[in-house]
Length: 119
View 1 (cartoon, rainbow, N blue to C red):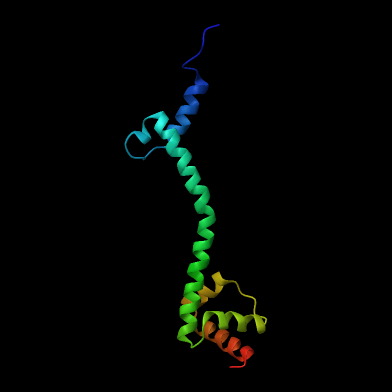
View 2 (cartoon, rainbow, N blue to C red):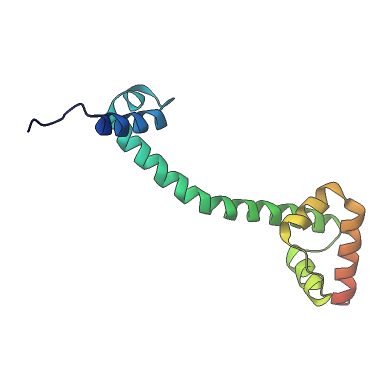
C-alpha cells in the first residue's frame, strides 16, 4: 500500500498550526517547523501568564488601596487589620474600585477601621 504524504489529516494538522501562527514575524508564520515551536512557546507563556495575571491584579489593587489609605493617614496593613476587627468583609478588588470611584464611602470605611483599631 502506498504511503500517503499529502493526506488530509497531515494537511489539516499543519494548517491548524499555521493558522495559530498568523501574524508572527518572519518564518514563524509561514514555515511549519518554526511555527510549531513558536506556538508551543506561546502556549507556555499563555499558561504561565494566566496565573501571573491574578498576582499582578492583586498587587495593583493593594497599591491603590494603600495610596488611598495613606491619604487618610493610615497604612494599608493597619487599614486591613481595622477592617478585620470591625468585621467588614470586602475584597481588595472592590476596595480598590471604591477608593477610585467613591471616595466618601472609602473614607467611611477608613473611619470604621480607625475606630475598630482604637485610634
